[in-house]
Length: 151
Image 1 (cartoon, helix red, strand yellow):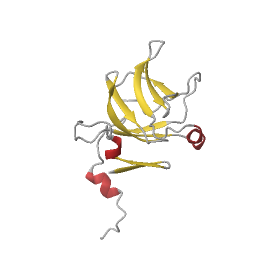
Image 2 (cartoon, rainbow, N blue to C red):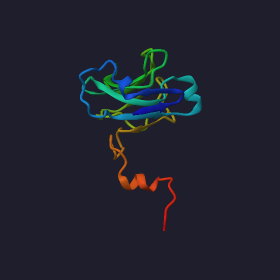
Image 3 (tube, rainbow, N blue to C red):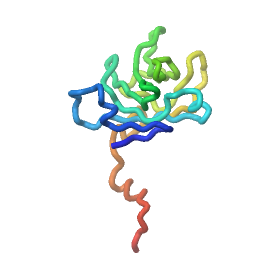
């Protein structure tokens, strides 16, 4: 299966290249979306694949950029608050959301030293998404069919 992100592409095999011995179960996938301005400033937007655990919660890797990948991971911040972080391919902190859920939140992402939520959306198996890691139901797939319907 191939995932496409803004000017990046990678396969499931590529995402697992350094994770030999993992379960053959399909990993949870997420998509980080933002405004055009944010996408120009940060090389972190696109599709992410779960790649193990970090600090007892799932960790996700994004599309390769110059040999490295951005990540989404959870940790307890220096001020003691539970926080999910989006890090760029150089491991620099870009965005955060204060949350202690097993999965990262869909909304509420901010830049450090900024009190306003950004227009960032995390779709897929995140908190507040009823279809966590699930494929669309057959009925939903039929509704989106491009085939002409016969009456």
